[in-house]
Image 1 (spheres, helix red, strand yellow):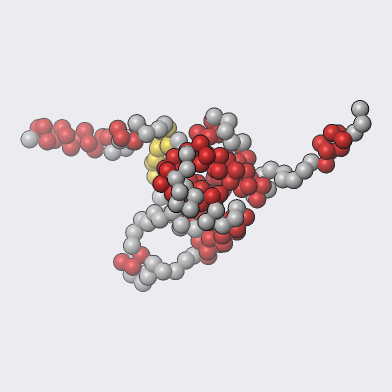
Image 2: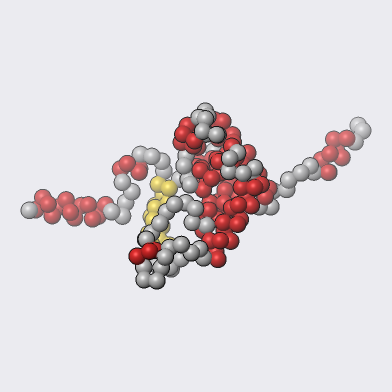
Length: 192
């Protein structure tokens, strides 16, 4: 019986730590105590390194592109498009699970506007944003499984598509100035 008690005590202690499997699949930061944004309940979670964070760290994308991706991801989660569910609303008294809150509906309109800006969900940029930034798949997974129009892509091409999509997002959110800078053009055209 003592072996069983030891295993149970050990497994309880390890519940607050990432599993061995998770640790071998990328960096995990220290535990962070935070409040759940919807309920205010205190939660503890480990921050994991995401695709956008790695790309920013390696200077593959600019801070503005990273911020644009984070804005899109937040809107995607708020719109409840990520497929994560905490409970079946149908089981709650008076709940049908079919109604959207105004916040979710507003976030869905913003996501639809972004999808229109990048050319729609059937384009390479739209599909990449949806799966890599919204659903948080890896670039490799999206490129090899989904790709564009169901055709696999080499992961470096997938990363290039993501970089282009993040550039469009940064301009859409007003984080970077898009268009030609007139001052630069004047300097280049001035006679020597």
